[in-house]
Image (tube, rainbow, N blue to C red; front, side, top):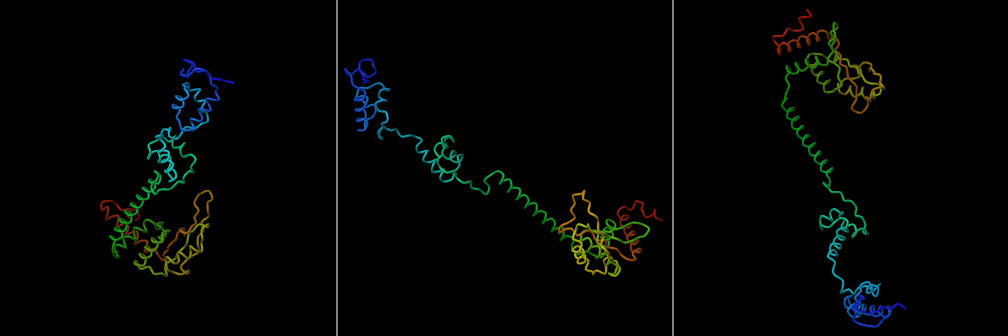
Length: 302
């Protein structure tokens, strides 16, 4: 049976002589421990000053509550767990408590991971998107303000102003081939067509002299487009010729379909040779008024 001798210099303090079995010492140590004595008190009571032996004697016996030193991090740990249960992230808890994320991870890793909560402006991307929306709204408001002011500035248009508008409009978009002097205007914008028709009527062209031809790609809704243009011009089918279909080119990306596509409408004036000459002369007058010293191209036709 093992035994421990207490001799001067053997680590037991040399306070007692003789021998004692390990088991008897352990029994005494355990009894004292369970009575609430500290390691120091047991050491002094049993005169065992060797820490290794003392550890063996007290192995498996927890220290009494009163001997435990309060841990400075216990409060932080409890607070970290509270914050985690409230849904905070590691970064937020670290900012709140000032401790390391490694410690936080150890303290709260057994708790469920909180769900991500979206904030109206919680991320840089959301803030950037909000900024773009606000900038877009400002541009749109400025655009509408400018557009409204320009529209109101036009006011009422006189016959002379409409005359000049019609001449410029035709010279930009109308047919100018010679020698037939045919008055023909083609456009896909319904407002351009309405404006040109208003000009023709001011110039004395009656509805019986008007003929229309739809030019449209075969991939479009032809019937719906014919009805659309009849409504735009306000005249029945007797004024419309056979629709001209354009073949679709599969090599292009253009689809020529959709609600906004209605093809182009060609407006032709019967017996329009005299009107064409008046258009030419009026355009020459506009150019001459702007550049009085410039030789007119009309002189080359004489």
